[in-house]
Amino acid sequence: MLDEKEVAEIIESDKKKKKVSWNDKKEEGKMDMDSLTFGTSATPSKAKVDKAITQLIKEGYSEVEAASLMGKPITPSGELILNNPTFYESKENIKGRLALRKEKQLSLEKEVQTNRYTFFSMSNIGLGVAVLTAAAVIGVAVSRNK
Image (tube, rainbow, N blue to C red):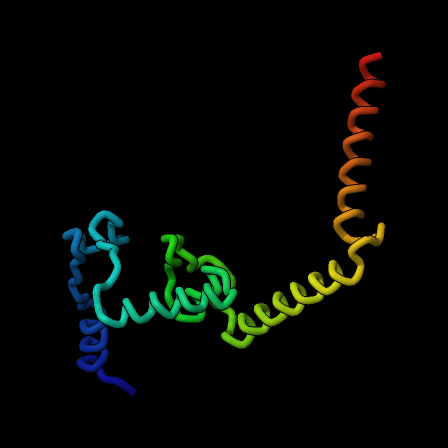
């Protein structure tokens, strides 16, 4: 059991509040965004990271993927990617995605080379669907005007 002095000390210690002040001279509430400064660092490692991101982009990664692999929340074009799910993916997933893209690209190139004159290629089917859609839209428009 606690006696009255110990209880009083516990209550008194709970009442003491630490005073905190932010750059905006407030002591309570959220910090104003105007008082925060944002910018890029100017360390030698920044140049190395930017160079590595450029190299990754040349290897076939997108800007978002390259910046994510290097752990940088801003792409070279200045886009903030903290809300992008790719930023939080593992390196293995991002590298696997690039491998799938390259494999898909190779298979598409192979298909174009081997089936160059076939009617049922992906580009011909897509073109056919687009033409049929346009014809249907024109047909509906003409029938409504009569």
